[in-house]
Length: 158
Image (cartoon, rainbow, N blue to C red; front, side, top):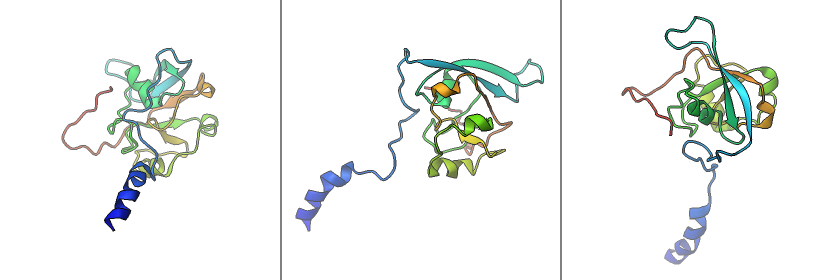
């Protein structure tokens, strides 16, 4: 039996059932092609008007929307730091944009089930990568998120 384990172990160690998750998302070069789109925040910063706050950002193609949001100080939490283990980077897309996105994974759909104010066009920002087709889109942050941390932990962008 020991001889069999020795032969199997090197192969089994390289086999994965789940996709590899990169902490914080893919690393994209600063000189990657870019697009511009707008984050719409329904709860503006202190001192601003009660109207939706809009921030147009430049995003690198291939990075996640969570990475883009953090680079531009958008109030999108991402408590799990981009590994699809929470729903605090929940975003709401217009239907025409949503229809062009890649299908959500089963893991993402499980996390979305816990999202506050879930809609038919909701996705997690850590799972959606920026594409050329996102040029000019508007994506909305929900009015609130559910963060299950109870110790006051506030994640910091990397």
